[in-house]
Length: 359
Image 1 (cartoon, rainbow, N blue to C red):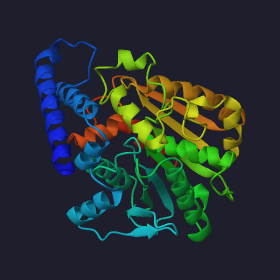
Image 2: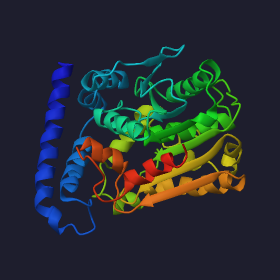
Image 3: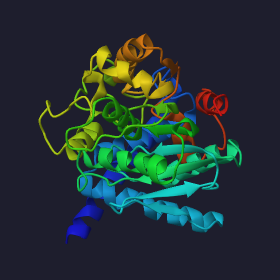
Image 4: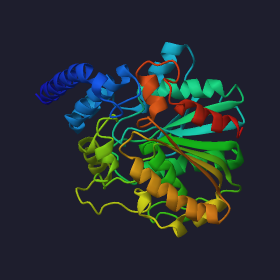
């Protein structure tokens, strides 16, 4: 009965999404700047907004999968390579793309509101990125637990555990690591930086022997509990989801309906510039990327300003890029939608070029 009700809800949401797409297909030509940069993407974003907005947590999970490990295993089978996996002491897994013996590693945390696992499109994008960087660079995806089963700070514990394993057990130098993440994955990286500088009371401290080479934050989810900033209005018809979806996911992740459940580790926009000053002793350089068309833009820019003031004051290098006409994690969405290359915003080139220049 539960599965029937879940499927019924998904069917209802899908019908609404299809109706929204059909309506947008007729009105998109009149949208002007109030939409995406291509006709196809504009219709698909309308469909995604409606679909996400009309699902609940059970339907999210049923529709988008149970685990990143399952996605990785299927990806390996489809692309003809043998899966290689790290199993951490807690049982948490991380999965390799490229040679695990490569000296340089892109340690990656996927987005999905902490509710959705790594999607097939995410995996394709990360695999493509790793291949473009050459055989001397591998990628390692953390298959962290998703909410609501895995509530904060579960994912932060797992991220710390993976970094500890790479440095203390695998003997890797932090200077050979670049940490990357999109959306909730970007939020997780920022939480990890907070923990390294100010140990979380529920997680064992971790001291690194050298600085992490670089950090990539793609559309990081910086403000979990504030869904009333101007960008939520101006970009309402330009992005892939709206406040309904983010509120559902943040409540599942935080395990609370309270608007005051955020802290400096999970809602980095709340932290003052001084909080970020010690991070300059932990990381060499940071890229913060946002799309001009995303509803999270205000939170990202507010965080970037404070982070730059604190991290930059102590000598850290920050590059914040807001790409016009790009939606939330534009370069990843385009891979999910079947694009083989950039559709014109230049978003992929920003990220890929930044990584290449630092390897």
